[in-house]
Image (tube, rainbow, N blue to C red; front, top):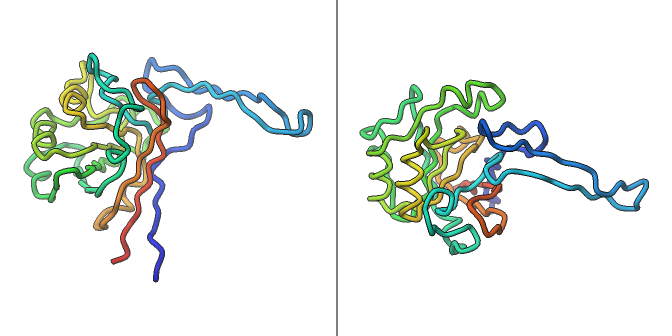
Length: 208
């Protein structure tokens, strides 16, 4: 029996990890040196929306749930791959992809290819409000993108999705590996009692 293939869709976290303009940069400092202290330890200072991360409703919804209040079952589910051609979100094209209730929809725009370039933050497409409403209608669990954000200021898409309890994952990578595949998503954030957290996102690809 073949083992399922696991695909890591999370970016590495280090002091060179890009952050959304205005967000704090990641800092990593030694707190214990093996040769000196007998152990290695580090102090990590990181924003809740740095690297591959998850937005909880509290991020943009008054009285919204924080990550620790989310049922664990919402962090995993059947994945749905959607290719965005020409960096333009098109509702008619998205409707051609079967999306079941409880699905985790991942939009592959190709922006992760320029993750370390200014274009990543300056020239990314946005999900439209009609698409966000469609995803709410479909009752998906989560929406993920290989971009720094699902939208631009004043962030209407964030509010549409988060008000309905639909979690958001941003800064995904390796989405091309999922095209044409059946897969399950596992996306478990650090259990912080706040608005968001870095998240290790893994796709388990079926061999059937």
